[in-house]
Image (cartoon, rainbow, N blue to C red; front, top):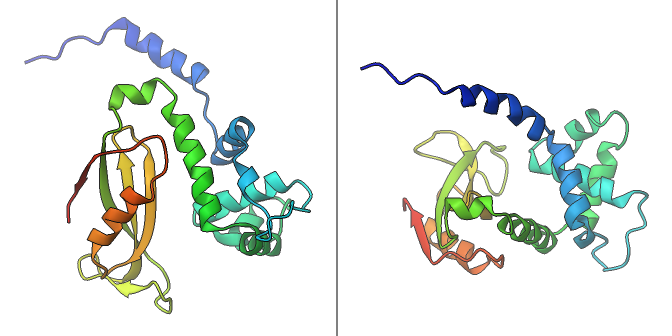
Length: 203
C-alpha cells in the first residue's frame, strides 16, 4: 500500500520553524530564564547576607551549567574563555549553593513552565512516572555501588517526570537501595503547582 503524498504545507512549516524557534545553547536558555524569573536570587552566602561577588548572577549561571551538565569546575572554566576559573566555580558552589536553594529555583521554573498553554495539551499534571538512570562515578565514593544489571560502579539518578514532560523531582541514590522510599520522597518533596495523584513506576 502506497503512502499518501506529503502535503505542501509540511515544507512551509519546516521552513518557518527555524525562524520562529531559533537554536539556543544551554547557557542562552539559562540566561533567558534568569531574565524572566530571577531564579539566581535564591543563591548567596549560607549566612543569608547579600553576595559580594561581582556579577553574582553570571557566576551562579556558570555553576548551574557546569555541575548540571556534569562538566565540573575544571572543564567549565576551560570552556569559559577566561571568564571564570575553576577555583571561582568550586569555591562559590561550596559557599553559596545548597540543596534547598536549588529546589526553590527549580520550583519557580516548574511553575513558570506550567503557566504555558502547550503543556496542558499533553496532560493535566495529575499523572507522573518514576524511573532511574545509572551514572558512572568513581569507585572510591560513598555513593558508588556495583550495579548488578548494568555492570560497573555508579549511582542512580531517580527522576519523577510529569505527564506534562517536565521533571518534578530528582533524587540521587545508590544502586542497591530500595526504590520505594525514593518514590515517596518525590511525591512528598514536590512543592510545585503540578501535583500528581497517580504515579507509574517499574519497581
